[in-house]
Length: 338
Image (tube, rainbow, N blue to C red; front, side, top):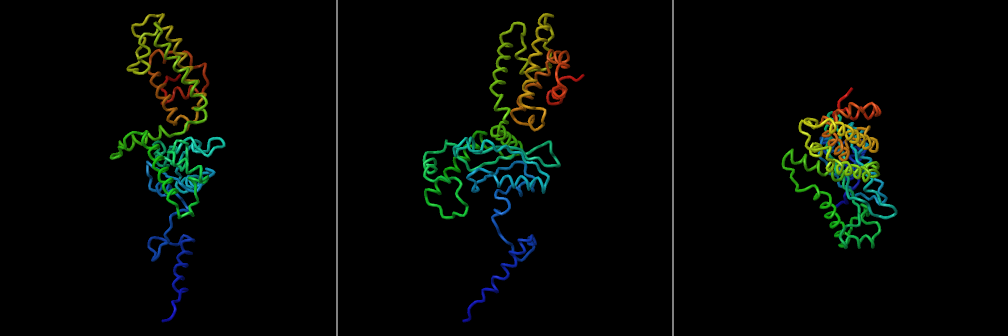
């Protein structure tokens, strides 16, 4: 029996490999080059964006011991260049803390904005293979004995039992840590999905550096204002109206002295709005759209419905910069314009 001519068998395979290399292979070809996609997009983000998915969960376990985020960075660039889609992710919580090999979180959440509907962004949950120090004891023990964990080379296809179990247990821990805080998984319908992914974004959207820097000061000042309103006899009913503004009619049946006092106090509320606006740099739309900043804006919008606050704004607005007046008089807040 003659020996097989292996050159004839390999020739078609090499030909189709060259075709794939020069992007000449397609779904009507006799042969298709099948790949895991690692040479283009490790996570499948590109194809999910191509399909205009509104809710995207990315699991990134590539070899990335330095946490340089090459894979997600490349995928975001390709989506912007090829589709005009803007994906916003703040990756700082995933970086190593100081000189340690531990991160602050396992995931971050951001937005995906499609050019045809930029005002209605979707949600991206990006999960990274990281350690925070809160993992089960056996996982942390494996890390101490194997410094590259959990970033072994993807060329290693021969895991030991301990190695396999450590990766499996880390994955389980990360999944529960990411998704359980958002509440019961209720994604059977559009409204359920929207609520669930909104919860995820509010939980895992990384605070901006300004938010980290000023959160304590803002909270302290806000609580001080609330304490004054609760205990001040010159502001009867004002506290409840801050949170349930209704028609905003506080002045009705108040004495002239109470109205004058409340007018002065309203200037302090407006000053607090200005402080938050300035400290968090809310002149930038991307800052205002952050979940933390949206919370402040929604509260300020309720304040702006109260008649005495609106009167105070009319009296004091000229003392503020034009950019703050633009913010206060925008639809986000709703104070009256000139």
